[in-house]
Image (tube, rainbow, N blue to C red; front, side, top):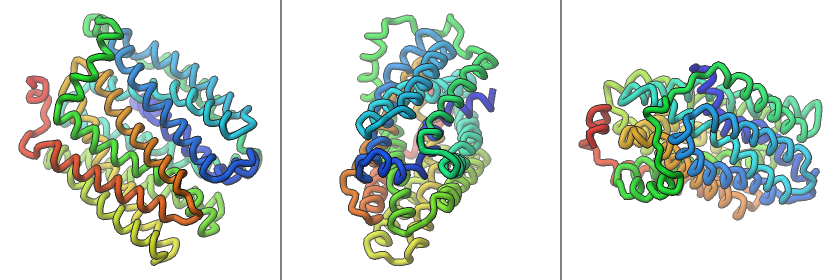
Length: 395
C-alpha cells in the first residue's frame, strides 16, 4: 500500500520532471520560444489545480479507487496527445488533459492517508510517503535526459503512457479505504458549494496559503532552472539532471527529519521554521540572480536550501488542513492541492512571462513566494493551537 500510494502521489512530479531536460529541445522542434514552452508547465498546473476541485467531492461520494482508475485512463490519453503534438499550443492543451487525469491520483491518495491516520501520525505518514515519492523527481530528469540521448522528446511522453498503464494495473492491489457507510451522499452540487464554508475557516486559509505560496516558488524553480542552468550557464542536460537531483535529496532528508521529530516539536512549529528558511533562501537567491554573484554555485546553493524546506512545509500543511474537517477529507485534500498548484500556475507563468534569458525572473518570483508562505504561516495559523486528532475533530 505504501508503494502504491507513493506512486499515486508522485504523478504530479512524474508528469513534469521527466521532460524538464527536453524543454530547450522541444522549443527548437516546435519552433517556439522559451516562454511558450515554459507555459506547458502552467497549462499542466491549470488542469491539475481545477481538476482536484472536482475529484475531491467525487472521491468523498463514490470512494477512492474507482475515480483514481478513471483519472489514470484520462492521464494515458493526455500523455499520448502530448507525444503526438505538432505545436506549442497543441502541447499545452494536451498537458491540461493529462493533468486533469493525474490529479485524481494525487488528491485521493492524500485522502486515503486521512482515511487511515489522524493527528501527528498523519503528518508522519505524509512525510514518509513524500520521502518515497521523491524518488520520482530524483530520477525523473536523469531518466528524461537518457531518453533524450537515445530518442526524441516525444519518447518521454510515450514513457508516461506506459507509466499510467502500469499504475492502472497496480491499482488492483490497493484496497478501498472509504467504506460506503462513511461516504458523503449529498449531491455533487452541494459538495462543491461546501468549498465556500471551508474557505471561511482561518486555519484552512493559513495552511492553504502556506503550502500554496511555497508551491508557487517550487514551480518557478521547475520552470526556470532548465533555462537558467542549460541556457545561461551552458550546463549539459545530463548534468542538469544531477543538479536537480541534489535538491530532491534535500527534500527527502528534511521529510525524514520531519517524520522523526514532528511528535516532539509539533507540526505547526516545524512548518513555520520551514517557511522562515524558505523565505531567507529565496531572498539570497534573488540577490545572487540579480548581481550574478557566485556564478552557478550562487544559484545552486540557495535553490537547494529553498526546495529542502519542502520537507517541513508541505506534509505539515496538508496534515494540519486535513485534520480540521475529517468528514470531508477528499474535498479538503482537493482544496489544499488546488491552492498549491494554483499558485504554482502563477509562479511558473511569471517566470515564463518575464523570461529574459537570465536567472533573475526565477529568483525574484521564488523570493516573493517564500515571503508569502512565511506570512501565511505566521499570521493565519495561530501558534498556540496544537495539532492533535482529538482537538481538530472536536472543532
